[in-house]
Length: 115
Length: 113
Image 1 (cartoon, rainbow over the protein chains, first blue to last red):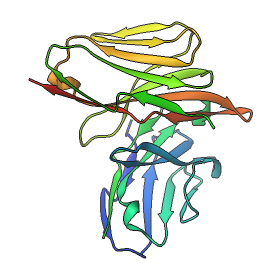
Image 2 (tube, rainbow over the protein chains, first blue to last red; image 1 turned 180 degrees about the vertical axis):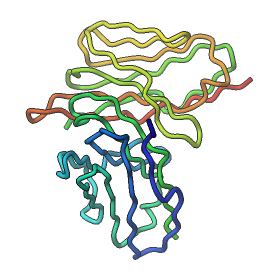
Image 3 (cartoon, rainbow over the protein chains, first blue to last red; image 1 turned 120 degrees about the vertical axis):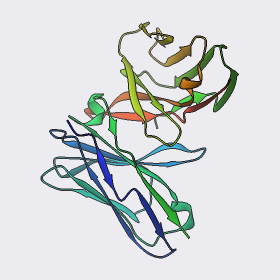
């Protein structure tokens, strides 16, 4: 079974631009969660989607948004990029909502650099 | 809100020494998961603990869940260079008729050969 895939793997943008990241979960998984990882900050939860609906949201500004499609693939969008948005963005899929304590399967991440 | 605190943030050990990382929550967890992230990689699930006082072993790794289900630890005996990476705990809280999975800050382990 193929793992979680994320595209692109690397991205360089400038301040003020917007970016869209994509995540394809493991086949059959319906939940996709997004995390931001920066040195010293660990894994910061962004949001979780299940059956095309946002079910949980972390403490990030409205510039961070996402959506999920009927095939469970998910996209994350960051508008008006700031230098501090430079990070590794990880998505994780699970069979059911993460709140049901299901195992999270992480993708390789998208490394975003904002100049 | 719910938080999972993990210590230490960094640990440098000589190969062969033991290593322990601790996770603490102010509120009771329903269960806890542990993940390992190798340098340049992504977190990979190691184990889940559910019962109060539960202890599980994976070769040189020993995972414990506290009696009050508020803390957990991961102990590695006789570290090897292959143990290098960041270890995360993730606590599961019942919340709003569902649940929430919250990750600790991680402990970065470096092993000197």
